[in-house]
Each structure stands twice: as C-alpha cells, then as structure tokens.
Length: 263
Image (cartoon, rainbow, N blue to C red; front, top):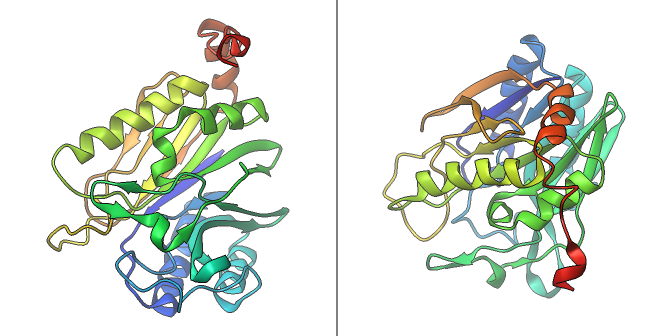
C-alpha cells in the first residue's frame, strides 16, 4: 500500500489550513498514494483558542476534507477539533475517503512538560480502525505514542499498521523521545507505524506543542524505513502488508502475552 505523510505547518486559520490539505493531497495522489496522513491539529495549530474554532464532524471543515478525498480518490486522515461537553473540545482524527468514514478522539491527553491539554480538551474513550482496500489500520494521536496498550489494541483488532498524527512539543531530547517511542510501539505490536508530525514552525518553543517535524515510517520489526527532517515535506512511501505476518512468526510478542497475570 502506498501512503503519503504530509509534514506541514498549520496556522490558526482553518480555511487556509484546508487549502494546504487540498494542495498536499493532490500532490500525494499524483504520486500514487492511496492514503494521505496529516498531523494532529491540521485544522488549527495549538496555541490558538480551540473552542471557538471547533466544528462537528458534519461541519464545513470536515466536509471540505471529504470533498478533497472524493476528488482525489484517496483516504485522507487529518487532525481537527470537534465540540465536547463543558466548553472543551475533542482532539479528533477524521479519516475519510472512498469506502472509509471514521473518527478517533484522542484518548491520552498531553498533561506533561508544562502543558495541560485536559483543560481545553475532553478525552476520547474508544480505539478506532479503518479498512482501506482490505488493509486494516489503527488511528492514534501524539501523546498516545507513550501508551503501548492502544497499539496492541489495534493489532488485536486485526490492524497491520497504525497511522499516528502528532504535533510534538519541542525541547531538549524531544526528537530522540519521539523517534524512540514510535519505534518501540511498532515493536510492541509488530505493526507498521506511519508517524506524521507538524513541521517545525521556526518560532521559539513555548508550552504549546507546535511541532518538531521528523516524521517517519517504521516497520513491524522496529526499523526506520523512511524519515524526514524538521521542515515541511511530503513523503510518499510503500507499506508491505505481508511483512507483518512474517515478523509475527519470528517475534511472537502478541502470542506470548500473559494478560491474566496482570489482571
């Protein structure tokens, strides 16, 4: 399966960001991509008041993404914000395209490194997977990468890969942590992980996670197959579905689990 990783930088204006998504999706489709994955907060960057911008899944921004997916014949995955109870929003991944319509609300909220996502964002409560041409893929968002249970849940649901959208916080050691965690999650669940982050916006880092770039595709054996630097860039690459079964025959971490011990 050919997928595209769209490492872009979004700003506070959802309409401008939607035009970016359209431009990059068309480029990806021209390169033969079947799935195009964009970062968390593609609708509007962190550091922007989110509640006034939030839209429902049947609102104009999501419908715009659907039209882009329909026009290009691709499945588009992009981060947006949807209304939630108590004046907060949900940090939502929309996955849409021919034969695909799903959303995932981020389960693990980024209350770390001096930032409290839970003050403005309500947590999700269920994993989500999509099927594209008979290939099952899980959905995950940013801080989720620190929690291996979600990626194993994707594998248990039949997924051979996870699409991980992020807007990673900058700071000492954060690039190393990002790469290490993505590779570890691929190994934990023996799945492909296509991890796309917001590009580095080139501004001094603050408490809001605005991106560091360094998107990467990691194989089910934990090896990096393709990667980007800090700047905006489109990566189109192929994911070998059959490799997952071969790796699981050799590295039987899913089969060898003993969940009864931990209950």
